[in-house]
Length: 87
Image 1 (cartoon, rainbow, N blue to C red):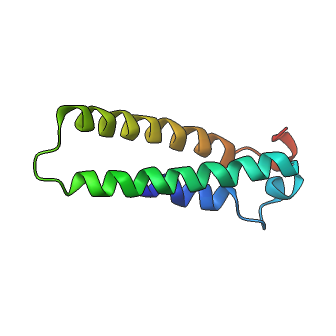
Image 2: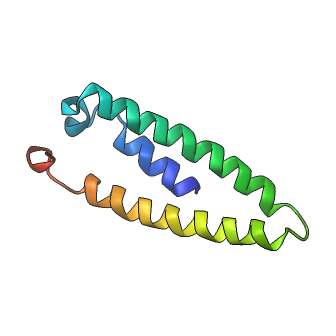
């Protein structure tokens, strides 16, 4: 999930034109999402070091990985939208 965190950093960069135009509540929500992604990433890091994780943990890890790919794709779609067409 590290690449997802990096993409969120890009999206949340105050220098980005569309970031400056976002409503305050949206910015706050995006920062909360980034915080949650960092927490989930740390859990995944811990689980990846377990020698024989339980099947439910493996399932959760796979679901989290798939969700992070979907989130990355969505963030990519936001990063490549011209600022005047963002909203």
